[in-house]
Image 1 (tube, helix red, strand yellow):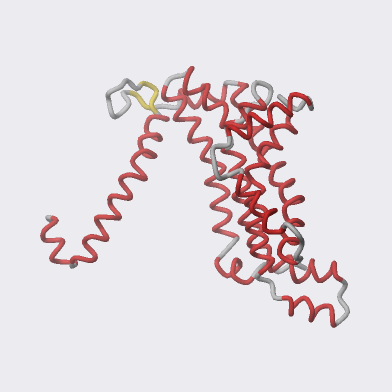
Image 2 (tube, rainbow, N blue to C red):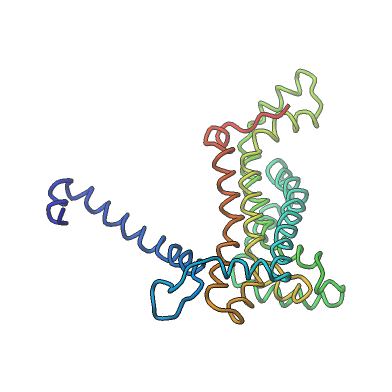
Length: 276
C-alpha cells in the first residue's frame, strides 16, 4: 500500500503517529541491530554493511581473555556492594529527611544534586588527591566510594518521597493497638515505601555497572570493571570484539529490568509490598 493510500485509509492522526513511531524504531533499533550483527561477524571489513562471515569467533575470544572475564565479575561485585551500602546509608537518611524537620534539611538534600549538576571529573580529581593520602587509590573501597557519589542521590531522593507518601495515621493506628516503633516501621512504613526503595536499588545497581570515569581514575589498573575495560577493547581490538563486549555489558541491565517488570507490577508499586 502506498503512503498516500494508507494516509486516506487510516486518517491523518494515525498516519502521523505511525510515521513518528517508525522514525523512533529506526533511530532506536538500527544501531542495536547493527551491533548484534557485527558481534556475530567473524570477518567484517568497512565499508561493508553486512559481515562477510558469521560465527562465534569473537565471543570465544572475549571469554578466553582472563582479564576481561575478571572485569565482568568485578563489575557485579562492585555494583552489588554499592547497592547494599547505598541501602544501609540511604534508607535511614531518607526516612529521617521525610519524617523530621531539622536545620539544614533542604540544603542536605540539595547537596546530593550538586554532584550531578555538572561534569563529575572535577569531583573525581579532587577526591583522587584525598584518596592518595588515604591509600585508597587502586582499592575496592575507593572505587565503591566513587560509585556511592553517583548513587546516593537515587537512594535518598526516591525513598524519601516514598516515606512521605506513607500516612502518619496508619503508623499512629498501629501504635494505638500496642505495636512498638520498630514493629510499626517493619510492618507498616517499610512495606509501603518498598516500591520506591526497589526503584532506587535498580537505578543504583545499573548506575554502578555503567560508571567508568571515576573507576578508571581511582581504580585503574588494579580494579578493572566492564565499563573501564571497554575503553581498552575499543582501542586495542577489532570492531567485533567491542560489539561483543557491549552486548555483554547490556545483559545485566536487561535482566534487572525484566525482573523489575515481572515482579514489581503496577499494583505493587501503587500499594506497597506485603511483609510477614
